[in-house]
Amino acid sequence: MRFLIISDVHSNWDALQAVLRHVRRKRYDRVVFLGDAVGYGASPNAVLTWLQGLGTSAILVRGNHDRVCSGLDDGDYFNRFAREASAWTFDRLDERNLEFLRSFPEGPGELGPDAAICHGSSFDEDAYIFSVYDAQQAFRSLPHPIIFFGHTHVPTLFSLHMEHGQTNLRARLLSGTRTVINLEPETRYLINPGSVGQPRDRDPRAAYAIFDSDSRRVYLYRVPYPAAAARRRIIQAGLPPVLGDRLLHGA
Ligand code: ZN
Image 1 (cartoon, rainbow, N blue to C red):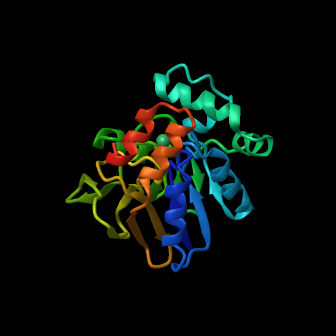
Image 2: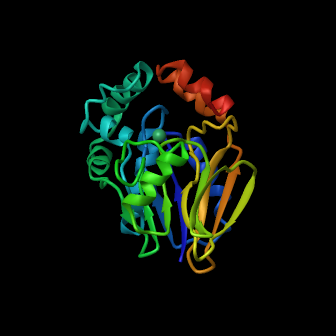
Image 3: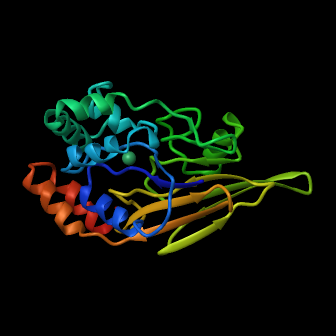
């Protein structure tokens, strides 16, 4: 089975379209979405209509912005810009998309016995996995050898294996246009494919991954898209301009 893995789209339809064009000639069986479909960007309905159109073939978990933008959570911990954007989104979602957004399940979810998915971390959908310590907690709370996560918007790989009776946990930031990860049988992995719609690793290109569970490989890609157009839409919508500016820098 081949899974297209996308995360943190954040209402950026320009970026999502570029990813879908890029992936068109690659085979995949199911779409996996790691949360934060909306919030920040100017095209929430376009993104949600596409996701909803996938029907039951898509495997979803909700993100914190999905909760706040659909009114399930008041988001009082959000900064000013995130709060402004979530109120803007809530006001503009059409009825069908609002209902769909509210139906996103809380993670973690499963892609089979070997792989799990979550938005933030496996024990808390809002926790961030930045450090080796964070990764250790996440590995502990789920048995799956492979766990995909989002939320940080930074493409990252943590690997855990036993070496001479000691656990060895390594972290690696994944940069570059195409990265291939060969999944070893005795090793566990936590993999963040990066963000489609608001990358934060100083590379403004949209990020996504393909997970091939038969060949046990993960492919990560970076795709250029018209970030200036996405920025213009944000400014024209009356959203905080900083949310458009950051797209140009991947920050
Ligand atoms: Zn996010």
